[in-house]
Length: 326
Length: 284
Image 1: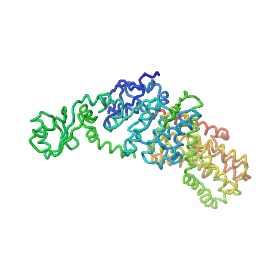
Image 2: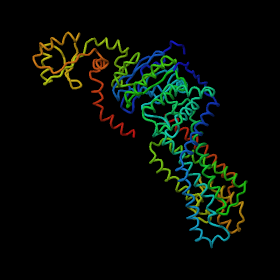
Image 3: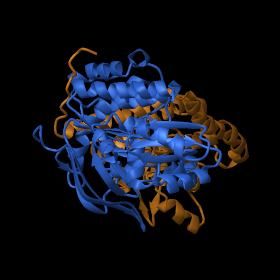
Image 4: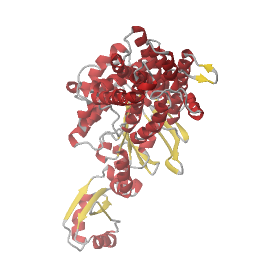
């Protein structure tokens, strides 16, 4: 594999569980060295896609290569070249942090003379070297995730898969993990494929693919995606939201909707629009906020709902899955 | 971190790599066992209870019919097998545990053959079981079995073989199982009748023919009998009691030699190992 070959290629990839199609034929390429984000609500098909790319699930259609190897026919080759950090922990709590890494090194066949140094290096990177002898069951959720990231990197994979690497973590740990990811780009020759449903985290990616209901809606850099939306987002608080939506429609010809508890609409040059809004709406406005297009707006404009609203629909399902996981 | 990243290049898969994988899976099994004192203790209580409480109680009842032999001496090889079998099963059961806690995925996604993982697991289970069995071996003197090095070595080897096969059996069961309760339920269901029909608790001589048939098809019989033969060959037992307590295994008129019995256990172990590997391949 040369330095310019894509790290991941996916064409027409499908996965069905019985009659339910989790992934409905997706195509994309990930360039070497980039941080590629898979953005979508829970249940959109992100984890299913990652499982297929990691050789943990067989596609029911289409094909994919990772680091130049077919995920079905060259499973072992793919496995040697990838690192994995799953949503749920996969550590042995009864072993120490270092023992967990040693297990991984032996299982992956890391050359013996490198094992000790490399373990130390990855553990120092996630600031866990001083806890190397502690049993993993005494670790907090954030420490476990950091250890998993260290383990995923131990064998210098070409591609690191992170499935929701920051979900359920406190803000400090989340930013620490992003620190490691950014540092990785500098120190290691690695491509990162991650899934997330946090908009603010998707901003860190070089490119993102928005996935919804098993299909890729759009792929581009966060900047390009935001530029493609073009308009600013205006949110206002009023005493009567229905009346406000009607007034916006009648007087300004704007389509508004209640999102996240405020009347929300998109308009070019929002700041200049605000004075006109106050003068012309004909009803009191309690507060107003104008924001540049964010990935939230990108998501809305491509899928028709906010990621939180999309998840609220699946809320029961997510809760049931969380319970089943116990 | 200013230092240059150490870049690891994993060499292509080979026998050396599989060997390392076997070793580390086995090593983990040992670490886990050594860390779990409660488990070590609980695995010992049962056979000790059988041997010294049941054995003593039943022994006084049957003393008249087996002159010259302590009933506990008879039970001793049976209790060794029981300890070894229970320990081995528990080791195998940890696969279900690993699945529940995600660690199995770490193993299954590694670029290593399924054989290496299953063999490592079975060897680990077998060694742990032998370790547990050694404690029972140490009690030999208490039930009138001599501490002959030859006998002890024979028993050790036979224990290892039995434990390996049972772990392979357990892994086959555990390969698809999703939770611990189901596994332990199934384990009880499989182990209890196999124990009862193996000659571990009562001699297999003079049983009704239907029961005799069950004992002959029970694979565990072939693990228990060699141990009993080994123990009895180091004892001075009156012929009548020997015939009753240590009849060996007969297929119609054929007295099955110890070598064949051990061969059956080993063969079964290999077959079960293959089944377990196939289960894991399929589970992917």
